[in-house]
Image 1 (tube, rainbow, N blue to C red):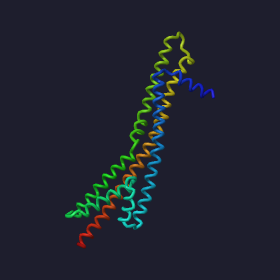
Image 2 (image 1 turned 120 degrees about the horizontal axis):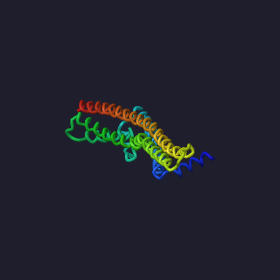
Image 3 (image 1 turned 90 degrees about the vertical axis):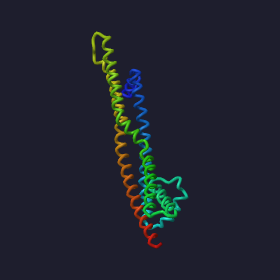
Image 4 (image 1 turned 180 degrees about the vertical axis):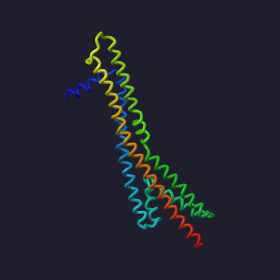
Length: 229
């Protein structure tokens, strides 16, 4: 209990600038943990939805039936389902346009899927830049507070005739708290950023592979229709 009280007292007795540094690091840590929990939920949900959609897509379901089922709730579609919906919708529109060449239909479908993928990536990468910023700058902010606190501690020694450890220890301790808070804010942010960036990269690769395989399926359908005509 005494340690907790002495720690709080050190924070309260710190210089105003060091207190501002500590408060900013505390806020950065709170916001980064909020972003960590939110991204963890969103990315895990995206992986589960991609698994479920791929299983359904490759189960042999009729693509038209799959599209019509998704079209009823297209405003809420995310991830791979959104990529499929955008691609198939553009494919149907171009296929039914008179005079369209088969390759033009497929290229238009690919463009629509790329746009949908870009939109999905923007959504998945939300808050990652914030975590990267917190992870890279927090140690330096904490170090700034430490340096300023140590300067004040040694400056105070100029007003006494005999310097003792008891005089300088509280000032140095409160200064080092700023460094500890900077690391406390930075380490989880860096770990979370690396993990989430890897998940986003893997999801992007899955979306790209799916879009390419889907475009190949549609291309075969277009050529078969052309042969019949």
